[in-house]
Image (tube, rainbow, N blue to C red):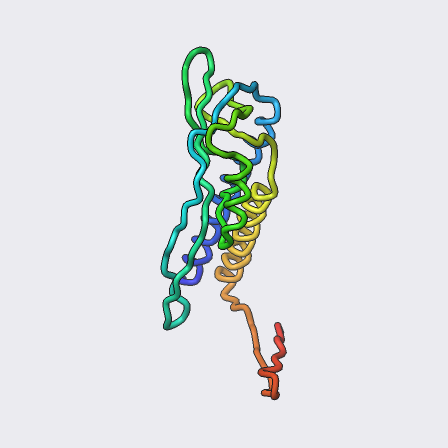
Length: 181
């Protein structure tokens, strides 16, 4: 029954990620028809984030670079600030080059066109529309949920996924075959 619990966790997490992706897709599509306002970039910096990742018995340092772009805009006399560049993009990478490209595209003081949600003017974006990251989130949710469904079904049926690894050691390493019978 423990295996079914883990399978249900996969299913719930997959559904949650899928719903988040679906909502982001809806917002991204809607942003194409949102009204616009004039805005100004207030901050445009590259933030270096450092964290430790455990891989097996060892820990290794992982460095990522994120473009922090903040902007202000005015709707009906009310000033708002936001930091979303596009839907589906975190604008974070292990390469500083990506973050530098974004901050050079949106330097401090640059005048920009901001698309904002007319129902919630505090929700805004510099690049309206759907980016590939939205589809990636949606696909990941569906994939995780499908793995969860398959595992739940197999768990209730008392089945295990039979995997047999066979292989021979060669000079270049291990030549392995996977038999799913």
